[in-house]
Amino acid sequence: MTANPPDSLPSTVERTLAVCPKFRILVVGNTGVGKSSLVSSVFNIGIKDIDIAHNRAGKANIAREYTSDTNARFILHDSQGFEPGSAENWEVVEKFIRDRCDERLEAKDRLHAIWLCIETPRTGSRLMQTADEQLLALATDLKVAVIIVFTKYDILFNECHRKASKEARRRPGKSASADTICIDAEKNATDFLNTLIDNFPKRPIEYVTVSTSEKYPKCFSMLKKLTETTRRCLHDVEGELWVPWAAAQQINAQQKVNFSINEGFKKYWVNLGKSTVFKGHILLDCLSRIHLDIIEVWNFYDPEKLLPGTHFCQEMIKFIQPLLTEPQPRSNMSKMLSNLSAVTTIVAGFAAACTPVLTGAGITVVAVEFLRQKYQAVPLTALCLGAYIVDLILILHNLFIATLVREPPRRLTWELVMDTLESYKNSDAGKVHELIRDIVSGTGTLDPKERIADLIRQQLNIDRE
Ligand SMILES: Nc1nc2c(ncn2[C@@H]2O[C@H](COP(=O)(O)OP(=O)(O)O)[C@@H](O)[C@H]2O)c(=O)[nH]1
Ligand SMILES: [Mg+2]
Image 1: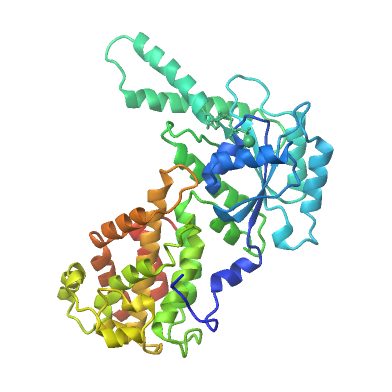
Image 2: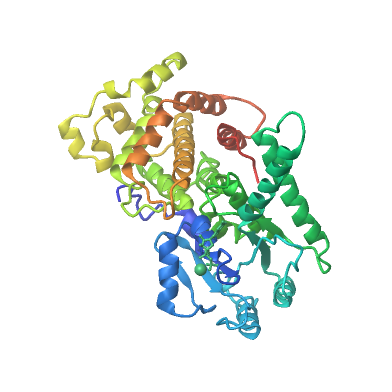
């Protein structure tokens, strides 16, 4: 690891996560409903790893804490549901939930959410079994988030699609387009499900339909919705569960961005000039601290430690280098960014005195000198830190999206990281820096930190939560 801030600059993200470092979730459902596939997709665990772990443990055991090297931020409890002959019965499940929802437990030991998985119904049969209803009632009483997850939605959709195609063929006149058939099928599937749910007598229920089948086009948006619903349902008086949740889930980029803004951005940038956090430290160390904190939020599966590594840190510094060699006329900004390969490299004697990050090819003497200065609350520092944070969040966002199409565990590769850096270089870098410069130098009435947070969201076309 080469982003290496001193102990005197402790992590604020770790401090926030220390209250509750892992999100604890119970997934209940009969064998074969798709629990393992769901957990694999949402928490980025190789599907084989989950099942191998199960075989090793023998029968499912609700109390067993399943954790994974590919996602350090969650704990899974798995229950087979209440089918006849299953390892668990209602009393065991009830006791487990009661024990884990005891208010005297620390947040980290408590159960944070339950996903009750039921295969999406395709006939007018009963939506839930008695034990499922008991579980909902118990969870509501104990104030733990409970969400009904209708799995394998694609099967219902495909059935409706076949029917819609058949009907379209029968209809005289102009043939229906593939799009129209899909829209009809989607509507029929939703109507069918809504009717079943509306007839469900007891209480209002939170439910989400999901599919983990890559062939189903809305697979990702459904999983994203599950993460949003889970977040909304958290019984989270202090807001403390939102943090481990945002860190644990590995499907919703928007939640990561908003978490990055709060943890990596607002905490460091907001108090520029007022805060004493960075006082007495060289800028490079301040950047290292920010760098590590933001990558912690994203929780990539990065066993080779590429993101905290020298090479990636150097590439990140190169993005802000043109800003460090101020003053530069604005019109030269983009030209300088595209001319990075032409910059002077630092001389050997000087290099020896620097950390590995700064001895890398392509970082100029001026930039190195600037980064080795002590932090000062001046506009150039604000610009430099702001630009670094925005670049990093945008790049990690793009990297996250690029990994999503891969099978879990979506392991980072250097090739993927380089591709993402390259496309960022070729797209917004210069433009984004110009906007940050305007905000830093501007005298607008709006809070600059909010304007930069909005800038990040606008660039990514995402909403505030
Ligand atoms: N069509 C479809 N099949 C699924 C879906 N999710 C899981 N499956 C399949 O259903 C079977 C059981 O899935 P698994 O995740 O092992 O279920 P578990 O026993 O509840 O853990 C496997 O063959 C999966 O490939 C889905 O969303 N759509
Ligand atoms: Mg399973």
